[in-house]
Length: 192
Image (cartoon, rainbow, N blue to C red; front, side, top):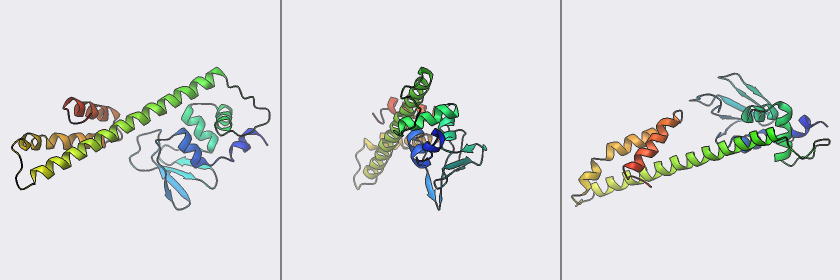
């Protein structure tokens, strides 16, 4: 059995979760769908077939098997991608050395660092959004109380700003606007 056949033992869903952790797949019958990470995708156009280990983006036309997905995600050649899968999932492959070329290691480390940064940014956006949502709710609860304190007027005047920042944080296709919204919320002292 060659390396390409060996790596097909790994579920394509596991491969997606391992190499593209921000891609959220949703089960849709015998397939899974998600937003393609290689273009600005407003609607899920990426389909994954777990039974056959295949995937395809109907918008940009790319697709393939597990190896093609990892090759695309990490910008590797197919053989390097197959070796990466075998190494990362501890698959025994005859004739494959355990050492990895410095180029492949550097690409994998860069891709892992990028995924780590994206995950940290996503967590910061989520935490900022939740803080703003809690603040928004608290302001409204205090304002709607039978005897609101006079100081609440200052906060009520900030509600449109909070709403605007929350809207900006929900825009997935524009990271610049999301970064600016996080920065603005911090500068306004609306969250930590």
